[in-house]
Amino acid sequence: QVQLVESGGGLVQAGGSLRLSCAASGRTFLLYRMAWFRQAPGKEREFVGGIVWSGGSAYYDESVKGRFTISRDNAKNTVDLQMNSLKPEDTAVYYCTASPSSGGAYDFWGQGTQVTVSA
Image (tube, rainbow, N blue to C red):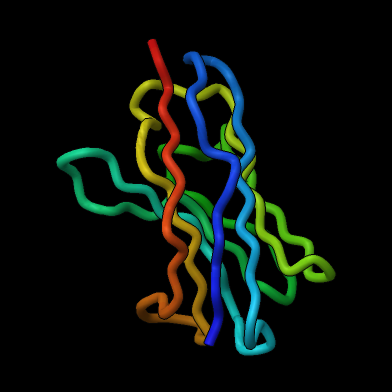
């Protein structure tokens, strides 16, 4: 199995930045893709962006494109989410997730980290 642990959440003012990190451990050789999701109070969990573990460009939801950047460090088994120009509507619990396949549902999830953006 694979364990994922997020860190880096917190409180920030609108227009500010935060960097989230996801550390993967266990059978990381199984991983094909990783992604970030978020869930705001009273809303469904939504896709933020993802990246192929072995290489290639990241891809993003339109709501964060140009503001958020996903990067990976295979040597450290980490995937980071750099969030700039944050808006109050970015407030949510952010989850790191991973999958051993190229499509379908994500199999492994972190516990989530809270991001709160004040107006």
